[in-house]
Every structure is written in structure tokens, then in C-alpha cells.
Image 1 (cartoon, rainbow, N blue to C red):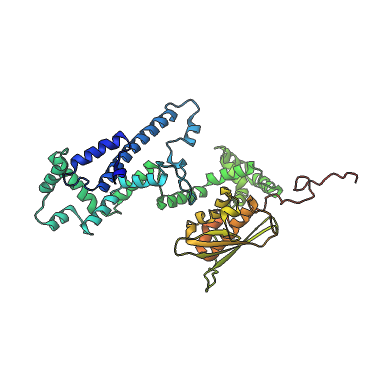
Image 2: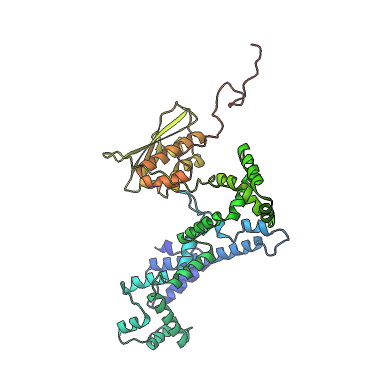
Length: 441
């Protein structure tokens, strides 16, 4: 223990001295271990404060203080103050997070604790053992012999900086927030406002409102006209469309044409009406529902199977997946760990783990083995093989947990982009489609 307590720095020494002088008083750290942890926590706190002060000083120098003439657009894109541009830090399992680095999630938890009365309520429930009261008067009625003045005096004695009336106000405020239900309108409103102010909005209500609003907007004549014009300018029309537009134009009487052209706009709608109907349903990939099949899991072993292939018959993989209840799951390729099979190429390994991230699952909850059925390759450490593995894993996950098909399908992990260039063929100059020139042999 003596070696343990030998102080590292002068600050450690000072704090140890302080701990020793306080040792007699109650509430002060008594044993050596307590003293050590007390000192270390103090040191850690000062270090954190210094770190954050340094960080602020550094950040101050890159914060734009004044806006140039045309800096508005570029500035709103990715300013450092905008939490939207943070990465959620431990994005991949096992990713290295630098020490003392505030991840967005830790920041969010801190803010949540600071900004909501919910944490206060939870603390009260823990301390009181679940005593709930509907109003402040209910509370005073239940404790019998305590009134507002007495509680105020107690708090004022505990916090000498507060005056009597301030302490009383604090007590009232805390009791009010403890008695107010979490879903009262004002509480909901304040929650939304703080979330908006901090830019951390995960309230699903907003999204539904937004969709509804967009839906209404896209029904308006103005939007339909704009959309038709836009698609027309992108040359989405064919000969038939143009013929119909011409007919529509010729069908308009002179007076109708004049009245419509008065706002120099409405005549577009009259002419492009059919075209806009054609183009309206075009980009609806986000609205299409996803087919959900029943689970295909082997009843005895609990194994589900998924297939993935790439580049013709060159890479064909089958992924076998089953749940691992000990949270000690592993992902192997041909019986080898991913790091070995993919030659320590982290970007390929995380490609294979990506379906788990998309489906909001933890890969440690599953055992996956991927077996190859394609031609034997000298090495699988390339993007195309990783792509095929990813597809196999994604398919296996959907067979095991059918509902995950929604996020996996939406993120495109279950489908192949058929517009890709063809695979590599020997006998062509660029490996793709340029034939060799004939030379005398």
C-alpha cells in the first residue's frame, strides 16, 4: 500500500495531505483505498476541466466570428457548433474512442440529465422507494408535521448560500416537478423545446408531422406544376407526352389561355397535367412497403441460412447464423476469424458487420459462420468478396428475425445494383470489355 500511496505529482501530494488532515471528520475518506480513489477522482476532475478549457480555446480560434458577403451557405453546411455533423462515436463494435473524448451519446445523456425533470423524478423514486403524490399539498398532508417553512429552513441550513425564501422556492419547485406527470402538455412542450434547442431531436412525433405536412404540400396544384416542370427540364418526357401537351395547349380556348397566363403560371398546369400525373409516382422508393416473410429457422439447431453472391459464379457465400445467449458471439469466414480471412482490412470486416448495425442488433448476440461455395480463390480480402459476404449475412439475419428485413431492405443490403459494370474477364485489355487488337502470331 505504501508504494500505492506514493504521490505522483505535487498536486497528488497536496491532496493526500488534505485527506490526512481531514481523516478525523466523518464523511471524509478513512481507509487508504478510499483516500486514493478520492485523490484520483479530484485529479481526474481537474484534468477534465483543463482539457475542456484547452479544447474551448482551440475551438474559439476556428469559430467564424463574422460572416462575409457570401459565407452564409457554406457556413450553414457544416459548422463545428452543429451537433448534427457529429458521428455517433463508437459506431462500429470495438472502434477506438480517444480517451477524454465526448461522444455525442454521452453528451446527450448529460444534457438529458441537466435538462429534464425526469432524472429528478427517477432519483426521488429511488430514494423514497416509489412514493408518488399528485400535488404539493398531498405531499405535506402525507408527511405530517412538516410544513413549507420547516423544509425551507432545513434546505437553507444545508445550502448556506441560499436565503430563507430562496430555499422555500426551491423546495416548492422541486415538489411541483415531482408531482407533475411526465406527459403533461407543458412538460412535453418543454422537452421538445430543449431537444430542438440542443439539436437532439429523436421524438417520433416530429417525423410524422413532417410527413403529413409534406403529404399535404405535394397535393397542391403549385407543387404538382413545379414537379412537372422540374422533371420536364430533366428530359423525362417522351414523344407521346409532348403530343398530349400539344393537344392540351390547343384545346384551351383563347380566353382560358389568357386568364391562365395572367399569373404567368397556371397555364403550365393545364398543359402539363397528364405529364405531372405520369411523373408523380416516380420517386416513391421510400414509400414502398417491404415484404416480410415468415422466419425460416431450423427447429432443432436454431440455425438460419442466407445466401449472397457477387461477380457471377465467382463468389458465392452461405452464412449460417444462430443466436448466442451468452453475448459471446463470433463471426467467422471459412472457420477463420474475420481479421484473418480479410487480412486485417478493417473496412472489409466492418462491411460484413454492417447488416447488424443497420438492423440495430449487436453482433455479439449471434454466432455466424460464412462458408464459400464459389470457385476457390487465393484470397478473399477484396471488396467484391466482402460485398457477397455482407449480402449473405444480411439474408441470414432476415431469415432469423423477419422484421429486420425492413431496415436491411431500405438500406439496400439485400439487393445488388444491376447497373454496375460487368466483372473481370481474362482476355480483355482492361479486364472489362475492350478486346485486344489482333497482332501477328
